[in-house]
Amino acid sequence: MKTLLALLTLTAILGAADGSALYSKCAACHGSKGEKAALGKSEVIAGWSSAKTLDALKAYKAGTRNTKGMGAIMKGQTATLNEADMKTLSDYIAKL
Figure 1 (cartoon, rainbow, N blue to C red):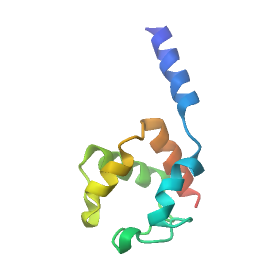
Figure 2 (figure 1 turned 60 degrees about the horizontal axis):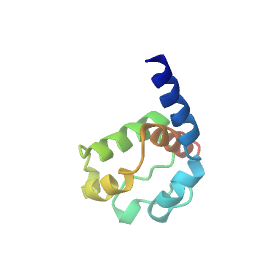
Figure 3 (figure 1 turned 60 degrees about the vertical axis):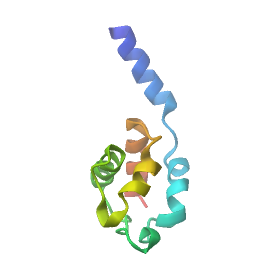
Figure 4 (figure 1 turned 45 degrees about the horizontal axis):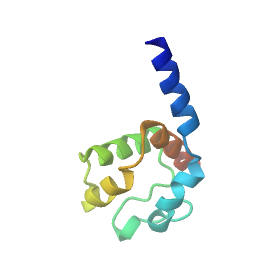
């Protein structure tokens, strides 16, 4: 069990992407600094805390968040993100 946990932890560390690389697909709608309302609908994400962004990403991925009708689009955008990626992305957005 300890070996499996160590392997999963190592995989998560090595597999975690860079925040700016993860954000690159977000920038088209949210702006390079998170300053835009995506598709003229969403909230501006600049200034969000890491925790708020992480909660939103998790909810979009789970399909339980549909703020301003963006649920389906964001569910698709978050589909490939794992927990470590969402945390890295949230931390990056908080620093924009």
